[in-house]
Length: 333
Image (cartoon, rainbow, N blue to C red):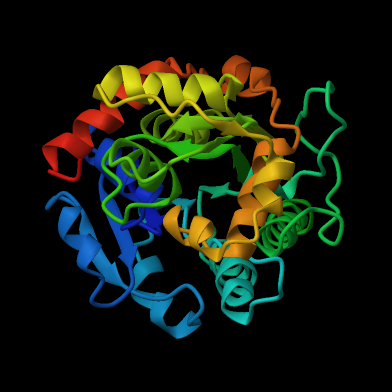
């Protein structure tokens, strides 16, 4: 039986670090690609081989991919750059599109055994309200909302094109939002919970939310290495939660007073004061994008992932509770 090594990009990020930790815990050999001098690399388990590199710099990836001929390579591509702006951003394009192209091309060149690419449900064309969103059969980069979604659609199409043209054994994961504890970069979800618990959110906004626990997402992404079919994608999502329930759960788990005033997205957007957006940790443009995400159709089907990958999402209440505990342990709330 050949030796195996797992190559994880974006290994210092929220999802990537959870993937690395779970792989190491299961006894797998792991190489973790991180940006040079990234302080978040210190949170990775010592058993992982940390390799400095940048997915936008092809030459810097040589060491990452070099393995003896008797070693089978599995690649989990988590690295991406998120933006809330609808405007074109060259850095986002370089990371999400060119970076993915570099990883995919190296996978073909090195004849890796498997590639799992972590895309986004944002890359999927939104269905009308009341219609459950399922895995796509085509991509429309110019019709999805936001530049991040556009770049993820372009990158996903490139992955699937290489599956067809080069015989790459590639599988795509489409996460909804990502939630949970241990986010040392304090990304959108953890920052939201922290602001709420600190009383920095005087009003709430109506809408819906769909996020998968990062630990469950990491687990099913690893399962996709052996169970995911080539050329297939899997939506990984959770229950649809309205924001009133979200606020109530955070208050219940943290003991902080509930936010009672809930504005409609229209009323929130009509507020002209920049101080409100700033108080909620966002620019006016970012606020508009957040409001879109709350009012869009967030009803995703994860039945395919459950049936083929064994995906079992934990209750969202558990995710909220663990996130609050982690923030309390870090003395952030």
